[in-house]
Length: 224
Image (tube, rainbow, N blue to C red; front, side, top):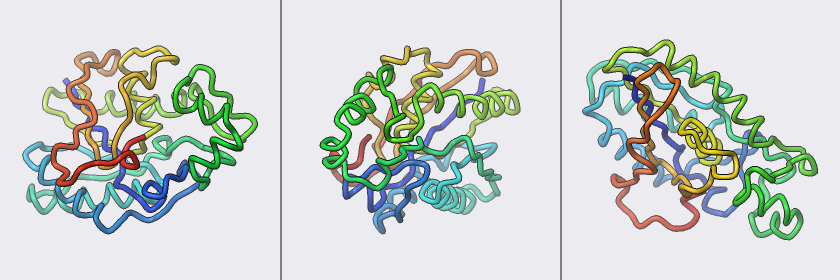
């Protein structure tokens, strides 16, 4: 039995401003996001982790390294951290850095389908990455993790991005492409937990988008 703890990175300036932020766009974490990462670490402090895997994009790397440092202090031992390039966010092409409202006006079909119709999303006009391309890119990392960590007590942290994790997690749970958004979005600094009993051949959802440890009321800019 392996448990995978999927963490979305802390809230950033572009998240707050309602801008698209993919694999090639980035912005700093908000100051208050560090307090929320610390709260997450305390929330997870009684769970021993074998490894932390982190997207190479800076907002996820900072989230992951802050979480690692806190857990090391709280648990009294070091948890190894690795950068996994396949865990990066969607390549959003020309939408990177644009406000959602501007994308809706300039690329209305791509805006609608990316949010609500993953099976119809065609990113060629914006020079981006499709849902099948992203899933094909990310799944080998999960397969490698579940192959390495096979023991009943193995817990692994995976720090990545909202849209990418949403697509990946729902695919691991067996959802069809058209249904990838039906569970709703993932919030900044949220935790989603999956369990596998058969070395990654199938997964069970234990917890979706948990933010119970965040001491503020979430607003729409927190979730994608």
